[in-house]
Every structure is written in C-alpha cells, then in structure tokens.
Length: 167
Image (cartoon, rainbow, N blue to C red; front, side, top):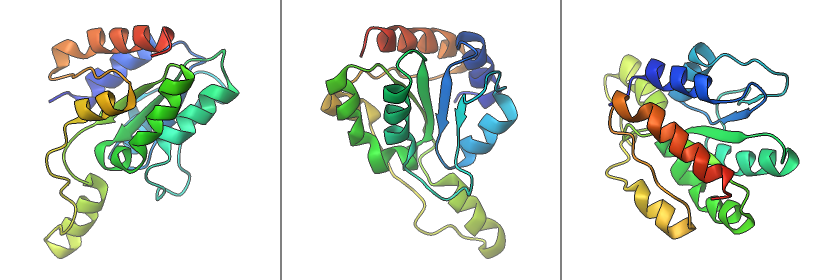
C-alpha cells in the first residue's frame, strides 16, 4: 500500500506549478484537496458537487487538448476509472501524453463509508479484482504499478517521461 501523503508529496515535488490536475469524485478528491498544494491559476479541475464519478479521464483529455503547452494529469479512484477508462484510446490515438494516477482500493470507498456508518453494512460497493494492466494493453497505453512507498518517486518520473513522449 502507498501512503497518500507520500504520493502527494512526491507528485507536488515532480509537477510544474502550472500543470493541470483533473480530479475525479471519491475519497481521493478530499486527499487531493488536503495534500496537493495548488500553485497556479486554473490548475485544478475538481467536482464541485462531489457526485459526478467517471468524468476525470475524458476531462483530462479535454484539458490537455485545450492546453497543449501545459502538463495535464488525472487523479481518479478505481471505481470512477472503470466507468470511462476506455476513453484512453482517444488519448493514445492522438498521442497527447497523459498520466492517470489510479487509487486502487477495490471498492467504491466513499459510498461504502456512507453506507457502513449509518447502516452497519456496505452493499454493492466491492469492485472485485481488476487488473489495470489489461486496460493499458487494450487502449495502447502503458501501465506502471506502484506497490509501495519506495516506488512512488520512480513511478511518477517514469509516467511523466512516457507522457512527454506522447504515450
């Protein structure tokens, strides 16, 4: 497991101040708000009503097309990612170079927490086993696993390198 503070510290250290972060809806939205300082105008695209899962992948593509001079990346949970991840085909076909940081915990965590606290159960929130390397293969993208805190800096650097080359 990767500590979110380790990830966001490494990400902030690596990213230019004018990069654009597109953040999907979920627990990672709150983590981004708490742990990722925004240092430039128009550098954060985030849901305002916290209920629009799945928009980060196509929104990141749109943000990159609208701002080709700026580095764009998405932070998305595994549930939201599965909703629109095949749009990555558009990004790879156009060679626009994006990174999608997927928080993979195996469930719709924000919904699960909202169910478990008042109802003491969390029905229909487990996602099951998802092999995201298969999404990369299917869309022509690359997949970089980050199994522990020790690999975060290198994984971010490699992902940015691939994005810079249009992959």
